[in-house]
Amino acid sequence: MSASNKLKITLISAAFAFSYSVAADHLSSHSVEKRISPTGSVYKSGDDVPVAIAPIVEVSGPRTGEAIYNTKCLACHGTGVAGAPKLGDVAGWASRIAAGEETLLNNALNGINAMPPKGTCADCSDDEISATVKYMVANSQ
Image 1 (cartoon, rainbow, N blue to C red):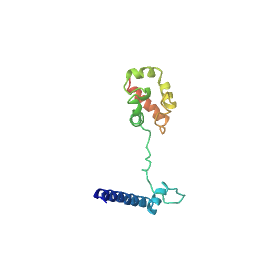
Image 2: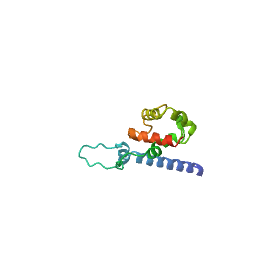
Image 3: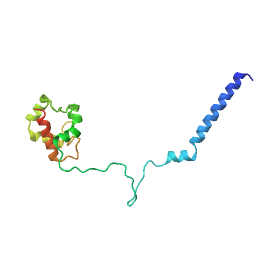
Image 4: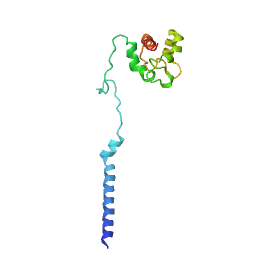
């Protein structure tokens, strides 16, 4: 047998041995158990449940229109996405302001075009939405 044939046989044998060891590890009981284990847990009343999220912080009092705009409205009204009038765009707000504050508030509360009711601030009160509308109007005239 020539040296090149011996080398080929050695390489083929090594590749086979390596692939077998990888397959054997893939089928080990630890590996199988890890792959089929549940991805979550179900807890019953009284169980000690680990806390994975930060606690909800209560807001003391209503938020300002500016604070709500900066956290909830800026994504659309700062860029003009889907036709949203941008804050400070006098021409874009002119016809909306002319329709009156009641119409603006009604549109903000109930949604209009691509904007859902209350925009992206589902936890805002009607008074907070009103304060936000007033803030946006005051900064777009």
